[in-house]
Length: 332
Image (cartoon, rainbow, N blue to C red):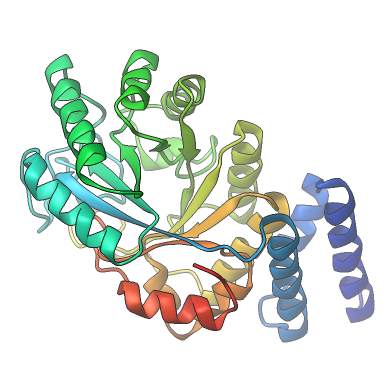
């Protein structure tokens, strides 16, 4: 297909999305096979993603932070994770933090203008009724001692009753990534199933929680796997999609994994916007892998970001993110 026909095809796909909020798998497959070395094609793709974001989501940009409140000794064997007990890494290990320490961090983030504050705990899920009770008291304490910051939770695989309880004590959003496609998932983890993750999302939706669910790029998945991730998230009706980029961690099976090119990552993010035009698409862990191209994402489909330090890797500073976001034309 010549250059003119490729640009014309991208325009045609865009028009269908603007008019019908619809893209076929075949159209998405055409986009994901675009040559990342062709600057004109990439610019056109990114421009389209940015226009879709403006049309469906507006100029608002959401910032969120996470706090690792229980670290390490996870029973699961996810091959990318520094907190798995199956691998020897240098990640810190500690039990559930005290509520006073947690609220101190929440207030600091609230002063910085963060919209959402998420508590993350290592492990397959909540181990007992006692742990759920302790967490419930922490969320109640946070709700009482903060102002407008939204409370999010990420505690692994949970049941419906646990989700209902989290909603009851002030949690508004549950974060639980599907990580990759259904087909590729068994290569990333063998100690729980892809369906376990899907069921957790369904439980949380039924409980009335917003859903934040995304993936990790660069773990060995194919381009078709990436498309399948986006279409699965669309089918699930999630509210926010965090895009993580693998940061190889010493001691894990992926420690020597070669990184995806910056353009391949940005192309994938843009195509997620084509498939999920009205959803919050979030820069999450590992975006430093983009290096000088990180700012491009703010005009290629991104309209949300995880900021500050992450679980086991260093993130971007809040002030630096704010500056780049405003330069891109967003309102925080």
